[in-house]
Image (tube, rainbow, N blue to C red; front, side, top):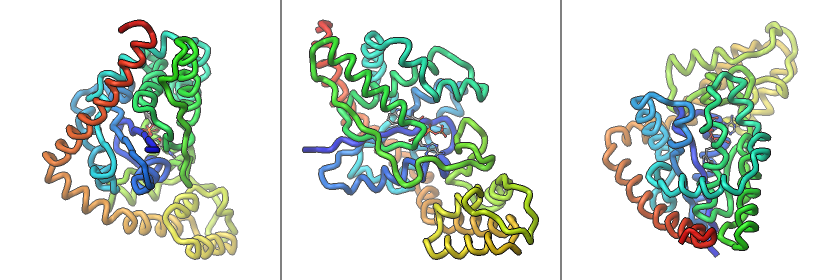
Length: 324
Ligand code: ADP
Ligand code: TRP
């Protein structure tokens, strides 16, 4: 049986280390699973809830495309497209919201968190989990590789699939499962979840001075150089863990505990690791930037394939609901 894997990244800013270690790294690894048929997309309809400048929308959408391809997404192994190339998802979202109770959406953490952070509470932001459910269900996805913050949305998708199937006595929709990688919650420079909406990111494309500035701004406690420090509670160490080998991690943890090392030193180590780790990625990204026609052709081809499947599922749902 084919394993349909699906995930999306919003074009709401430049992809960052949280997106990479929480989601994109898994996406690329999963391309090589036997029988996998992965679908990855740029969630631009979703980004409309926060990005309302058309120039920015185009720029961020291009950034996500470049970052995905530069990180190893292989268009011969994965279907890659823009969400908005598949207008059928909005049609399916309507069919799903008609059978979904308000209470389900009212419980969404991500809506409450975003509003608490000052994002305008539009109807779209509230309805967002329904559109996400449509993204997942329209391709009959089995597994959805995401970071921890998205797990509740996938549970809501399971509920919506069940409501629809039960209401219309059908089995159109497949129950999807969340799949988390080794870093389901990467922390940002302020110690909260790294997120494009929170201004605490380290972007994948950063290098040189801007990267140095942001790494040096990572929040730590105020322990002096000589004092022993706890690697387990340190934001700098948490990032080092994502980038360094086990022996390197053990060595730095010993230096933390021994005292005599300031946070400035561990930040420098993280900085070097980020520069090295993402060097090949930055080179590939620069090549792609010179070849935007190729990037566009990948997205167009992906959209054609995705749309064929989406149209079939919407037809099945319409039949089940008596619309056809
Ligand atoms: P953002 O919160 O920055 O807007 P997205 O919502 O577009 O990011 O997230 C895209 C993917 O990256 C999702 O699968 C999400 O779970 C994952 N992700 C985002 N931030 C993090 C993080 N800090 N740690 C782990 N995974 C993350
Ligand atoms: N809501 C996701 C996020 O903010 C992006 C997304 C939209 C998504 N549709 C999806 C992720 C479907 C997985 C599956 O990260």
